[in-house]
Length: 356
Image (cartoon, rainbow, N blue to C red; front, side):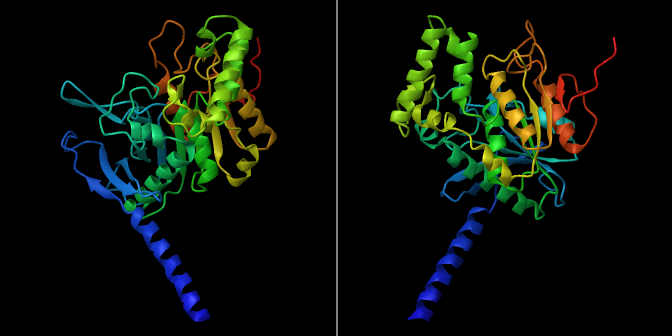
């Protein structure tokens, strides 16, 4: 009887291992809208939740241990590729691919519930599919990302010698969280956000009178009450995927306002790159400051850039939206690869004061 039970346990474990291996299998996709010489190749795999996860790789014929860059998007349900006037367009990944050249492979993952070429107008979830609104929570998104990393490594047949998790805005939040969840991540680049609870952002905006929180009628007291109302509503119904606040379901906000466990940083040895403009009205720079100080006091390897006068997309006043994104994504990639890069705005490690 004991042998039978042990055999049953072994078979269950073996089946689970086999299932995990099957889920990680990458399946190449033919995308007619991708030119034959396109820099990206599309794949599908399955994650541990049984979902199909679509991802894209540059240098898809590479079979060596070159570094891997996992690039993560901001909020919303935008595909990594869109169509306009019969052409396939990228939505920012070229900012990482160009400085990486052939020295690193780029991995892009579409969020579950996003169809290839989806192109909603806003950065929130109002125009997103019902499936996306159900799927897009922190742990479920991290599960999909890790499955794509598994499949990308299996496709190349060799583990990368270094892995960068690179994200802007919401992507920065999950870049930091991915490092805690996946020990393969050796470097983290967070642009214009950190994993700190978004409740910090809300209250900081209410106090400062800046950002979308402060656009509501009334003064500081009214804005603080509004923030408290939003948080309370979400906390009372955290699984609701249809009720919304600020363009996203309660289900989404419940994850974003949850406190970040700073003790979890003990689970990663990754190096950190943090860049956040002090004129950012979408994500409070005070939250980035808080995260940076936590890293410093925990003796973590941190490069911290805090450029003056730059907004959420690293544009100065009067510049077009996103004017500086290519620059700061490029700085992060060069930092990862050990190349020289522009260090304007660096506050840590502290630089020597210039003599007058």
